[in-house]
Image 1 (cartoon, one colour):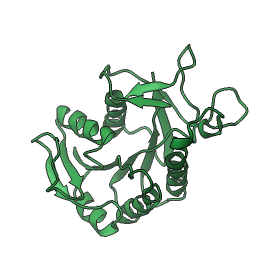
Image 2: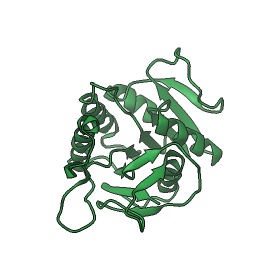
Image 3: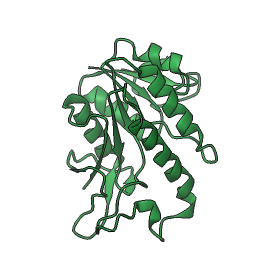
Image 4: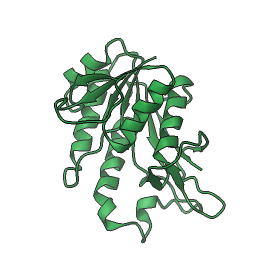
Amino acid sequence: MRITVFGATGNVGSRVVTEALARGHEVTAVLRDPSRPHRLPAAAVIATGDARNPEDVARLAAGQSVVISATRPPLGSESELAVATKGLLAGLAGTDVRLLVVGGAGSLILPGGNGATVIDDPDFPAAWRPIALACGEQLALHRAATDVDWAYLSPAALLEPGERTGRYRLGRDELVVDEAGVSAISMEDLAVALLDEVERPAHHRTRFTVAY
């Protein structure tokens, strides 16, 4: 398959690129500034573009099977996430190209049945609140889009670099936790889950989540 990845040099995006290439797909890694140093695999096609620009998105999506967005704005610029979301949705509107988005966990419902979300937890770190709120807006923008075949992947509460095990459990809108109540997944296995969705589409215009 032909896959375009925005946010390709980020923690998650770079692992998505690596996983996709390992599976034999053709990957276009989109960078705002290709002259800056990066550690992307040589097999990736490097392209210049900006997810905030619908024309860039349309150009880089032409002839592709899937566009993956793993963009994350820098600290203090969380509002850029909504701008990038609007650019991606506008650039793909009315096309047959799927959009898979790596989002946030803050809007997932906590297990227990009272409807509270992860961000509602009193122990939720204050420093993470701006990006969590931005991700909530990102999800809302996707849910309002009816002319793009999108899927939104919320990670586990704890997402860190780690081991690629190839295993995970799926959920929808509720946080997935293990027997000890922990919600975690490695960035490597998040990439596995995302590429599994690329190869075997199961979620259309909906959110899903993964954790161990």
